Image (cartoon, rainbow, N blue to C red; front, side):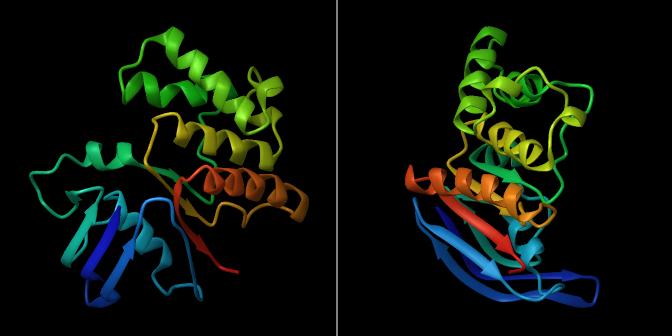
Length: 195
């Protein structure tokens, strides 16, 4: 599913990742922890080509990420990403935020995208909040919308970059429950955590 082979990453003269070898198989849940500035986010961001690796090979679902011939959109469709910040479109409702990816990335018809978005919002416990704007949702609810949005493009794996760090303990529990449910369903999960 995800294979790092001797992967290194530099930002100018600073080496952030050094000869990383790691295999993550379908259905595995992997959490990387470490101090701030140790390269955890960079490692995640390399998987969906938000950062380019400097050397080595990175293979995601059979696609060589560092091959210039490989369309990065194909890789990003396979790896849904949820960030520390929610990055929801403030002018779109929760439903419209979840519909955005299938409409724009996958070319799904509006009716199908809406049906799927409603099902995903129900899955993350937000069916009744579908027509609310991000400003009308709590932090935990916004993060669950972000998870539903990432799932809407039907990825084979989910990448979580400290998805609960900005949340209080009660809201953190809501998001962790959704992540646990995904893991129990067999979703491959790669998560960065500071704790």
